[in-house]
Image (tube, rainbow, N blue to C red):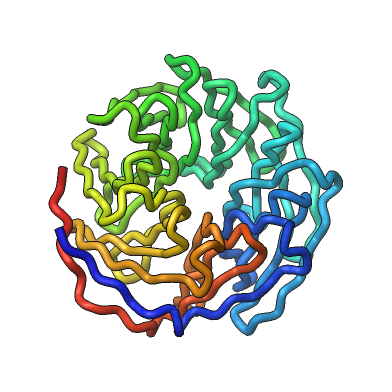
Length: 315
């Protein structure tokens, strides 16, 4: 197995006001800016491609804003993992939140995505449930046929269903908009799937944080896995790129990387290997933005140096 690596000198970082605030997840907004959750201080940051950074405090410093996504109404929607609510912030910075009736206290909402039905779908990590919230705030909760599975990231697939990782069950789940659930066990039950995104090839791509692998599952349930050069690199979040590859963060080694549809890996070091990269998203300028939990947002331009990929054998 071979891989390749590019220089970090193209990467620029934008520090947030409080380095301890914990930039965690990113989404591109309808206003052309990147919106970032600040998980440790209960805030949302907004960064323009020109480098202008604003921050908006939420109504609870301890609410734990986690994953964020663009909604069908032009606002940004996010999970509040520590107070069991779903948040909404418009592009003017006005925020509100919604409780989760039907979900037990401590259900810990985490992943969130815009669904094909005009609603937002989210995971309840501590309750083994998938939730749906309309833009009017109406919430529906669907139980999963498993216990202690820790549903994490969620994304809409090319088949019009919602797909999600089951971190502690070593599986990928699928739920239709009508609530029908199917589970697909992975070859390694201890692999710890976390990040998941719909790929440009029509499949779902996911990270295996405990095994140091990237996985691919078709909408028919066919699974392929690609081992990373460093099994301790802790791949976390993943997103589809405009170049036809999927890009992901390596939390354990302070890098971002890409995987081609054929499984070729390219790694890009960040300026600080201890920066703890988590969520990432492409901006309207074609650049890749990454949330660094140690207090900044990184930007890698679309024209950054990219060497020849090395092939990683599928598993």
